Structures are given as C-alpha cells and as structure tokens.
Length: 197
Ligand SMILES: Cc1cc2nc3c(=O)[nH]c(=O)nc-3n(C[C@H](O)[C@H](O)[C@H](O)COP(=O)(O)O)c2cc1C
Image (cartoon, protein in one colour):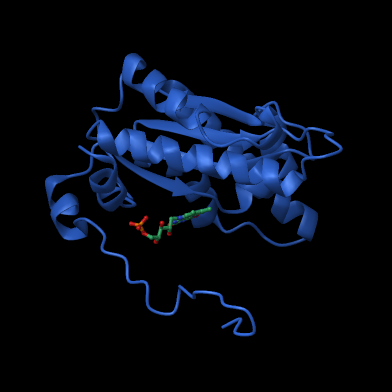
C-alpha cells in the first residue's frame, strides 16, 4: 500500500477485533511513530501499551478517575457512564496511549512538543493502516485527568495526546467507511502581497 492509499484508507473504526498487530508489527508502528518531526530532537513521545488483561485493569483506573471527578465536582456519578469508562478500552484488542513528556526547553515551545506527539500518533495510525489494521484515535476527559496521567507514569504538566485503538474492523465496517476523499473547498489560499485572503 503506498502512502496516499494509507492516508485515504485510515478511517476511525469504533469497534476493532482480533487480530491486533503482533509484537513485530507493533514495533514497526511505534518506530514509524517515533520518526515524526521533532523540533529540537527532544523525543517527547512516550508510548504506553495496553493489551490482554491490562486493558481491563486500566479500565478500572478510568472508572475510578471518573468517580473521583464526580466527587471533586460534587455531582452524582451516572452508573452507565461509570460502566462505559470501565469497559471502553475493550473496543479494541490493543490500545497505545501516546503521551508528551514536557521538556523544560528554553527554545522549543510546549505546543510544539505536543505537536510532535500528534504527528507521532498520526504516523502510528498510518503505519497500522499500511499493515492492514484498523485504528482509532480517541481522547476525552481521561486525557486531561491528573489521576490518569499518574497511572500512566506522567507528571501533571505532561499531556496524554491520545488513546490509539488498534485491531481489525469488521468487513461491513470497512465497506461502510471506505477510503476518504478530502475536499479542499475553503481550506486553501495563495498569498500575494496586499491580498492576504
Ligand atoms: C485529537 C483527536 C481526538 C479524537 N478524539 C476522539 C474521541 O474522543 N472520540 C471519537 O469518537 N473520535 C475521536 N477522534 C476521531 C475523530 O472523530 C475522527 O477522526 C473524525 O470523525 C473523522 O473520521 P475519520 O478518522 O474516519 O476520518 C479524535 C481525533 C483526533 C485527531
């Protein structure tokens, strides 16, 4: 699969099944991720692999974090929401959390460190697509919850950039989604002196 085909075929698949990338394929995916442009060579990327019984264990971390957020804000937890937090990692057989570890660099802004990690996440999704797997990038409240960051071994000032889900989509889902065709209407301008738009 060439690059343009992988770009078009990368779609968000909400449900992913075994097989997931094996150890060798996961290494290829993470090496592609770590090839992302990285201003200053700070290597801000961190990749946390969740699979097997650890998916369920981390689901309990997400559920407890939700319950704690409710307690913090004085709101009653919604049981269905707690259940979803506990079980949602089960939507794929393999999840990789991409995080950005903040460097106190005087020259490279934090936004650029996070941008490098977002580029790494996209590289990972494209590599998985090229290897024939489905994927999905998800975020949500857990990415911004210090309790979840702590469970990932991060500091409060670091960022969880995304939970990347990997596996195999159903044939029906693949047919329904199909390759993406992007429309550029309204997205592009050619700058000339005196004519900024
Ligand atoms: C930073 C980021 C966070 C995302 N978080 C979520 C999420 O929490 N839940 C979700 O359903 N999709 C999430 N997505 C996926 C987008 O919804 C998806 O890419 C979009 O709907 C376009 O569909 P496609 O990926 O099939 O092209 C996220 C995408 C990005 C880039």
